[in-house]
Image (cartoon, rainbow, N blue to C red):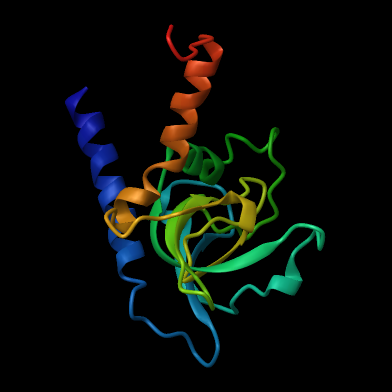
Length: 173
């Protein structure tokens, strides 16, 4: 009911405020700020802390082209909550600690290209100043769309596309 909607809205605002609070914070030395959790549970398991930035040579599969993205916005979706609570442990075997937030928008480090995309849900997300992502999972971002709007697109757009595909909707139908 109404109280459940208000509670969900407060959680989203709290997480968005936490992420906005990362902007402008400098980690010690060459570190960065990151949001992650060490155990499954409610929102209280999320911590903001300093961490070393990811490195491209840390990628598990050297055949995949990876890039570093300086994250400007992250969308928190239902899957983020389910992963954080541990509801998907039998489907996705994450190593903890884990960085949530798989939908994001930002700038490719080194090139300055504005992009948005979705991190591999089997790996760390983008609730950090820098995220290591597959280059093929990035979409160029128009200057006419802000980072917050773009970060909200990947999962929602993918869900809509999958629904259209499941219904066999084709041009002209």
